[in-house]
Amino acid sequence: MSQTLPLIGIGVIGAAGRMGRTLLQTIRITAGCQLAAACESSDSSSLGLDSGRLTGSEPSGICIDDQVGACFHHSQVVIDFSVPQATLGYLEWAEKTATPMVIGTTGLDRAIRERLQQVASRVAIVQAPNFSIGVNLMLNLAEQAARVLGEDFDVEIIEAHHRHKIDAPSGTALRLGEAVAAVLGRSLESDAIYGRQGMTGARPPGSIGFATVRGGTIVGDHTLLFAGEGERLEITHRAASRTTFAQGAVRAAQWVVSRAPGLYDMQDVLGLRINNG
Image (cartoon, helix red, strand yellow):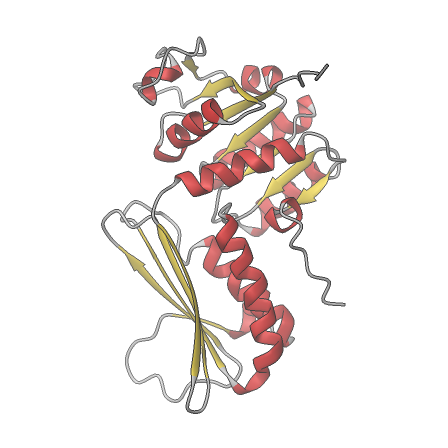
């Protein structure tokens, strides 16, 4: 006789936002998962609504509230796609309740990253700039291309997102730059060029350029360009729907609940980690 495995209770922070609603819908249709809590800011017009109403689904029995502590206490894992300062506060709750997290917030500064490392020494956390399976495969391809093409090719990264995105370049673009820089023995901190204007002179050898586009409802486009003498290689990923990010985040949530404390990313979740040693 087959044994029914217990459902994983997932809490969603920012449940009424664009990504939050997609997460609610994805959790609802994902086998082995159930919504445990749905949280919003105290000034949200969605407070008190049944979460099912936000996705046009049947009532779930889980209403939107602003009780962050309860969200962590009632969930086996919490998913957060919010803003950096809010994420910093949620890390305190993860540490206090020993609740694993999946974090898709981008634009984290050094202080928040250091705090993330501290909390991850006691709680399992998956943090990634992009939860798309395709983008994470793109990161692997970026490393392979950089390893083969080496110093003979210039590197440029072009990204485009919707008009509401508040950070630039995107976390995914920066992660692509970090992946290439690591293989080539460069430092993104010193070698990155973020936009160009005026009489810039010739391209500095070894630099990694970034170009940013913001407009409309673009979900997320990323192109990694290697330009050499007489040829160029472009690796491009285009997201047509936030569903791809939500599916990856829920997959990460299912994965992280059984992990030891540590800071993981989607390369770990998908088994794509490359040992560059």
